[in-house]
Amino acid sequence: MKKLLAIATPSMLLIALLFSFVSAKKPEGNIQVIAEQVTPIQFPQPQQPEALLSEISKKRLEDAIQEYFNEAVKRNQIVGASVSVVKCDSIIYSGGFGNKNVALKDTVNAKTIFRIGSVSKGFAGILTGIHVQDGSIGWQDKIIDHIPNFRLANKTQTDKVTLSHVLSHTSGLPYHSFTNLVEDGLTLTSIAGRFNEVLPLQEPGNFYNYQNAIFALSGEIIERVTGKSLKEVIQDRIFNPLQMETASASYEALEKSDNVAMPHQRIRRGWRPTRINKKYYNAIAAGGINASAIDMGKWMKFLLGNNPDVLMSKAMDDVFNPIVQVGGRRNYYQRWPGYKASFYALGWRVHEFKDTKSGEVNKVIHHGGGVNNYRSEIAIYPSEDIGICVLFNSPNKMAKDCIPKIHEIIKEVMQSESKDYLAESLVAL
Image 1 (cartoon, rainbow, N blue to C red):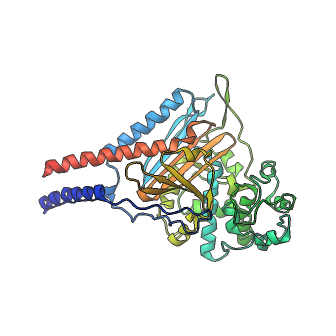
Image 2: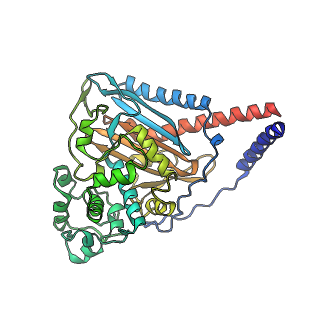
Image 3: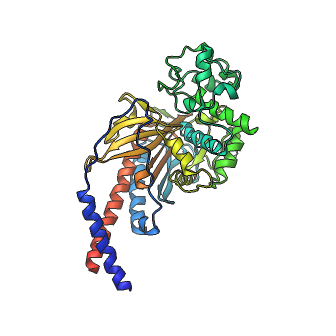
């Protein structure tokens, strides 16, 4: 029986490889400005353990990632970084590089905590989805129904703005309206009553303009319907169920930890550590979460469809469903290889990339973040069942393309493993 299996396995692999070479190229459809008709993201079925990387390939992946980041530290491009890579339901790599504090020369590891900035918006989208699933709120709930003092410049538009609008940056307000008030530490209730000072540019739902202040009202609504602080709700509904042991949503929690990467500012001959500030802890949904790479690995496992007890797949689909197209060509992710188009969903960016070899168009769920001299990047590749997260404790150019470069490293390692396995299978024949 074992001999028959040894023959059958490589034979099936050869057949699969032949089919992959003759697969037909799919026609491309038109991209809508409002993306209601964009093809939904398709997550793969759960894979068997043998679909994961072998120990030899994991070592290759580790060596390649270490070479990439150690070179950046050596060249003084970054102070420190921490990385997690997920495949299927496993964290296949998690590690740290450089220093938590350049003055102390203490080493970053996989459990070192960073501020993740706007990558927090993805948590806000998912947390809202959890409460929609519970029935306590709805995507089309009007903001004014939950926050009575919310005001835009006129009552008609005030009455139209929904939870979906604020989570997709389609409220119609100008770019970054009142981000300055968030950074000044004003309460969200206070800010909500001042949007009538800003003249909207478009009707809600017709226009994408990135926001922090009005986006954060999604968290304010969750606080009001639960009667708990947002940091408590996130802890109870996300961090605890996913066993994200180092994650938190407050300045005080970060202050108590003994394994924190300090933020850094570039100076003429290197880097200088700076203080952790309290910005965005008054607007957690927009940028107030702290986490380590190992916990972001657990988060990505969940985003790839594991832990349905936390959020069912239908609700997850709602969160990732593209809402509005993001125009222009000046955003850093629009310079990634094969870039085709971008959309914003509910707390997440959804990009389309065209494979230069196969012509196939694949979707990537992504977000970046920057706060208090920290930088962060997260990306989910649903068609490949892969997740990548990188956390930095210094502003740097490397953050702009670390995701596609690490993705390429993963692909090379997986292709190498496939070649090795095919060679071994042919020998067995």
